[in-house]
Amino acid sequence: MGVDKYCFIAIDDDKEFNLITEYTIKNGNLNADVHTFLDPADGLDFIRNIPPDEGHDFIVLLDINMPTLSGWDVLDKIKTFSKDIQDRLRIFIMSSSINPSDKEMADNNLLVSGYIEKPLGRLLLQTIIG
Figure (cartoon, rainbow, N blue to C red):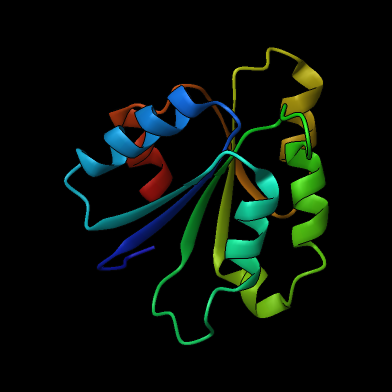
């Protein structure tokens, strides 16, 4: 990405995952903002309302299995957002799912930049930011 500041958006109904993610990012020697959402609808609202003059891209860490909206549902909703917003997102599926079809679906989704197994650690964080 080659940016001075990172903005992470973690969407997961697991509070502990969000805490671990936030801790890992904040302690990764990055200039980063971290926004965590337990409710996928709140995460979608945040993404939908990203100001056009916001000077950086957004890294989305998205869980698959959530009770109200699945990660796949979230991706379907993001597909309806403006191209400008979609182009500013790098979406990574973060899941503990061992279902091979989940990884395959992520690989075949044009919005998804990668599939990463939970939890987020320093090495995975470095892979994400490139």
